[in-house]
Length: 242
Length: 242
DNA sequence: TAAATAGTGTCTCTCAGACAATATACG
DNA sequence: CGTATATTGTCTGAGAGACACTATTTA
Image (cartoon, each protein chain N blue to C red):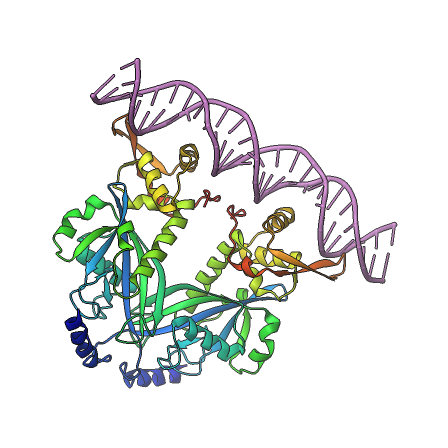
């Protein structure tokens, strides 16, 4: 063992990390919010080749000196565009092949992230090339790389989460109403939900805190709630209708 | 646009893909099977530094010439050890940080895979360094890199799948009995299940084909089934007790 | 008052849990 | 027959779907 350790030292010293040809590696983030009754995704207009001028997901390369892990890389890249950390961040999947980048073999790990629109409104306005796009309009854009697929996959994942969790609530302000949350879930799922069912399961699982405040929307005022800390990781045992 | 295309050509020609320092990228596969009433995972004894001599998940680097995408890399690496393609292969997640590999910043995409023991028994015996390990024994091994964590995460994912799908059936031979499948799910979930509930939902969803054959295990013979093609992607709307 | 929005009552239906009962092998 | 394993019958309860109903605001 001791011998092996010494041997390993020598091996590491002689190891040239650029000696082998290997794929480009990056991270990309599909950051969503819910604003003006619409799902929106944050896009950045590319200033460099390849795909200069096209809209793309925020992302980039690992900084070997600064980043401790790939989550840190993703956070750094998102904060560059929004000035704040997203309320929710989860790995979606990794896409790697010969063709997705004209520079050659490349791999990207895509994240799904959620944030309240108000929390990053100022930050985004301070960044010239970043903009919230309504998801329905994004289909008509010619996005860079395979980012159209990444966005679709992220949205599909969020749709599933809407069926068995209240994770989408991270796309709302800290305080929100139940009709607001239901509207968001309906936008993700693509169909209307029974308000009784929607409310019953959230109440039963005791996921929200009633702040006591109300917000009026033209009719009876709705109660304002905020999430409990643990509610982001709660899953219902039974799905809503898919 | 035409101008931009020409400009992009020049950019690509001048691009040196080794110019930037970037992390090592690899894939690893947690390949499981169910044999002798035990969950087992395929491990490979490392012949090279780092961690020479330790047991590790099968995996390796992308071959930029041969592999079209990272799934192909993973398949190639698994087939090297088993001589056959696994019945089920799904991305688990990507692990990248400064410390997981002593050579420096490295990223690995881990897959969860399932195969029938009999389908690769010969192939594995032909590979000196590969071996099925019962999952309960793996906890006592000092595995290479962060592979203990990868295996735990893969197992946790399979446990979830056992609650809302019959994906674990890919770890069984093509023909299997319902008590066998239930035993496998119980091993994954870590508790006994109601056989009536287990069978009822599978029958209702019409997921299996009764082959007409039976297999005797000392008592009344059990019917042999095989999966329908689409059953691997079916999810129940309601989970079993977690 | 009417219109708009929020929230509740309650019936039905599906399906998992529990567990007793039956069926089919072997010796 | 007795034992072992497989398979079914059936009751109960949790919780989602449907939808009518009530409540609270503004105009």
